[in-house]
Length: 333
Image (cartoon, one colour):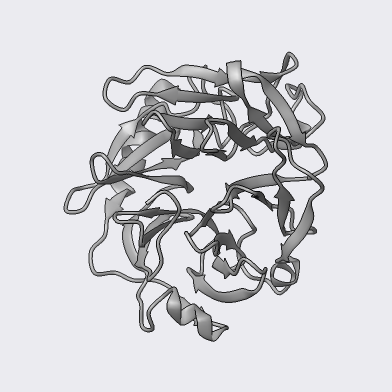
């Protein structure tokens, strides 16, 4: 078994590659204001390919490179302009005895206010933080009221230091039917001061990506349920909890039409426009909930992140790492 795993890893690594001068997909403009966000004739570049399921891109400002997860490969990869794609961290999300399901690795990644890499770890069922310079993880949270999380999926940090993250079942070996599940919920949680974990949303069927509006008064949560493929919005209250949610954008009809993908990861630009993965690729939605245009990758698309000076959008889509130039700037730049 060990030799087989080593051979599989070797064969997989031989298929991971950087790409040059290759493009994919198309840009679909649905509203004139979309021209203020993405230039006409913009191409979607392929930066790398051959991954099993790429996820969780995050730009490292102090270093000028991108990190992203390959969840089934239990690996975080590093991409930097002009260099080959390399392994940055392995194992990334599961340190136990293999095999462990088909999605054991890290998923969502962010850089926290201290400059540490924060990971949503499927296999180890926790949120961890790790300094980028010396390594060595510590657990930020792995349970709520004594019950282990399912498989933390995506995370965002508020300016005051609080973390908000989602906990669907995708990383469990048997998903929602896994016998090791300890909680009946697929919740959205908050890690507050003194590492206190609180449940803030408990009525979603498949919570996934999440992000704050520029003023942090609204929390957006994507739901990866083909029957209820929603982007939800919640008012953020003074105590860090959220008020009653509402459907901000409904992508269910697009799912029913056969487009690949579901609402998953999302990011916000400084003007409040939402770049959310969804059926067909990336959906660009205005702060008023209007679909302005689509970045169609043609693949099931997992996540995205702004990088470089904040105007470059990196996209993880199935086996690909992609990039395109925008005319806007993401939050945090």
